[in-house]
Length: 73
Image 1 (spheres, rainbow, N blue to C red):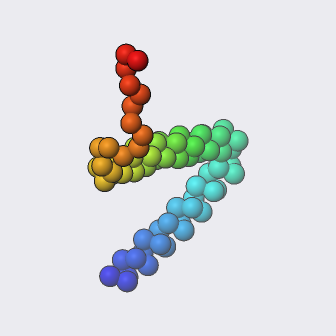
Image 2: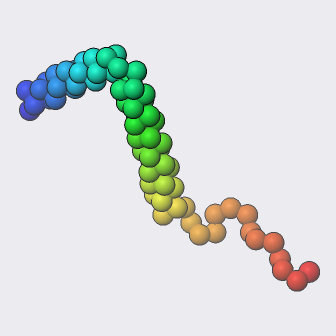
């Protein structure tokens, strides 16, 4: 099991080196890598926000919070 973890971490370091070499080779490549990273971060953040909200809404009672205002007064 430890060998698998070591192999994954080694591949991650190699992938980082390859992406850095590509990004430094051409300004357009750097812009594409940066924009795709930002899009991925926004998508992951929105998914995490919705997932956490869904989990918390299932854990909180229905009457949690203030009561709605009275109508017709």
